[in-house]
Each structure stands twice: as C-alpha cells, then as structure tokens.
Length: 320
Length: 168
Image (cartoon, rainbow over all chains, first blue to last red; front, side, top):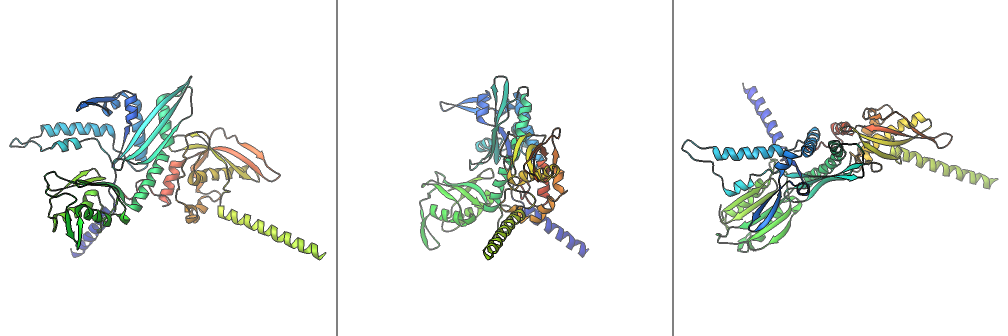
C-alpha cells in the first residue's frame, strides 16, 4: 500500500513537472484581409458619432466565397499536418453567435440572467493571438491567368508582422481559380512556417513580447505623478512602476512609449515564459505581483487588472 | 643543375599545398561540392517541390547520383532561390553551423546509398541534360522531386530542427 502511494506520488509529480513545462500556446487564425474584403464587397458600414465606418464582414465573405473557404481550409489542414492546428474562423464566428444566444436565454431558478457588462460583450469577438491575414488577386493578362498571393502573420498585441510569404505564381492558360489558389498555398506555407518558427525561437530565447498599460480611474485620489517614499527613495508612482517592470522583464527589455499623470504605456515588454516555480507565465500572472505591491504600504491602492488576450494587460489604479 | 632541382622541389611543394587545400575544402564540404546549380521548376503535390539540379562526375551515372544529393542538400541548407515560383526559398535548417554541429548525422545521411534517397525521386520522363566538360568530367542536369515535408519530419525526429511550435 505504501509502495503504491509512493509510485502514485512520483507519477503525479512527473505529470506536474511536464504540465508546468509547457509555455502558453498562442492561438492562430486565418482571416481574409480588409483589403480583400473591401475589394470584393464584403463589408458592413455603421455610423459612429456621425462618421461612417467600414468593417470587413467575415461571415458574409465565408458564406459566399467558396474559393476563400477552400483556401482557409487548405491552410488550416496544412498547419495541422505540421503540428500546429489553427482556430477556424467560420467555427469561431458560429460559436460566438451560439454563445450570445445561450447567454440571452439562460436563466437561474429564481429568474436571474447571466451577468454581462458592456465590456464583456465587446470582448466577445472572434480573436486570436496571431492573425494570419490572407490576400489574393487573380491577374488576367490576355487569356493567361496568374495569382498574386500574400500571407501576413500579425501579432495581435504588438501589431508587428512576425511572419510573411508572398509572390505571384506562373501564368497559365487553362488553370481554374481553386487550383491556382491551392498551388499558391502549397508554394508559400512552408516559407511562412519557417519565419513563424523563427518568431517562436526568439520568443523562447528572449521572452514573450507583450504590451502593458497603467491607467488611473477618474475617481482615484492619486495619479501616476504622486510621490512616494519607497525603498528610501522619493519617487513618482510612475517611476516606481517603471522600475518594477525593468526588474521583472527578461534582461530588462521594454520601452516606455507614453508617460503622463494618467497613463503609462509600455511596449516591447519581454516577459519570461515561466515563473520562478517553472509554471507557464502569462501577462495576468506576470502583473499580479505589481498589483500586490501597489496594494501594500506605502501605496495602499485598489487595482483592477484588465486583460486583452494573451499579450496585452491594463492595470487601472484607484478601484477594482 | 642544382638550380633546376630547387625549382622542381618548389613546384612539387606548391602542388602539394594546392592539392592539400583542395582536399581540405572537400573534407569541409563533405558529401557535396557546394557550388552546384539549382533552380525551381514548380510546386509538386502537397509537401513536394520540383527542382532542376546539376551534378558532376566521372561518369554520367555518378553525376546523376551527385545531383540527387545536391537536390536534398539544397532544400536542407540553401533554399531554392532561382527559377519558377513555387519552391521553398528558405532552407529547412536556418541555424548557422548546424551542418558542422551535426556532421556525424549528415555524413551518414548523405553517404552513398544513404537515407537521403528516401526524399528524392526522379520527375518527368527521366531525360537528363549532359555536358562533357573534359575527358574525365561530366556535368549532368536532372529534374527531381524533393519531398520536403517528409524531410522536415525526418530532421525534426533527429532533433536537428524543432517541430513547429515545440515547447508550447
């Protein structure tokens, strides 16, 4: 019995180490680019305070364009074959609609509904950490047709293009569009993946690149220029936060792109992939220590953490 | 007479040095001579690409074998930059010095009759371009199909390149 217990403990410990040894995996989704949607007429327009805004209508595009569906399907299949399954845009959109309907219909025994703030509704969008933006154009020169194809891998939080592949295929007299598209995917996907792998290598070597903002509620009694005596130094709250970020990033790598009494924006913040106990780190876990620090003396502030996916975090001082 | 002897010795020493360099270079390059020509001929089925590659040899058959090695070597270490669109422009192995670091593996992989043959096959009707450079050397160009997706899996399994997203 004692032996069985020991064996179980060892197995569980090994499982635990293995589970903690995995970094948080970014989600990737293929979407048609805004350029493609606008050129092909798949847009919706709405009035925002008197200004007309045009947004891509992915649902309409997927329902009408078989070629687009086929191309996204082909990319998804090839990525899955290479060991990195993607989030499917069509399924994500369908799931979002279904979720909205269920939230609206679900009630408790006493008649209460599901609590949802406007921000929860706003965040309920089809999102991914890396967006693969797809653009293609069919070129016609006399009877010959060719395809110009472009894949852009965009980090949703740093807005950087982290991978890409583009080119124009050989002109052909008789090839149909789906065949041209399939050939374009086959030609470009491995070069694209090679660049994506370079991005992942960089991430493992130098930490995950995230963005972080520190803001202040307008009801707060202090702002980021309030001075505190901390560790025997008289510093502004913003400077103390900046020092904390410097100490808690890989090799102190970050940039302060904005610093006012109300907002500090840190970009290119490289957070480690694992914490000191080898648990996978994300932005929320990373910033928790700063919240604890601001909750204690001499600051004694309530702080709200607001996450935007895997790669962006806001810390709002003054209230929860 | 003595003068001629000195000249002969110097010439001999010089030729030995030249040959020594060439041998060293060959040893460094290993299984292929690095200045082979390779061009893209188009995309094949999923995970393959068609390339035209040239090889050198004393007999045309030797040159064809060398060309096949060159084709696999190009996909792994060079990328296919010229010719028609559709081939991988980036090599499978990007890390500098990987060829030297894994020399044992690659020497075995590219040995005559080695496992590189599993990833390359003749494409088209098998016709070759044959040029006789001199009495002892043939230069032969062949179109081959390289299974780069399978090759990637092989290199991943050997631990030479990481699997896409490994570590997540």
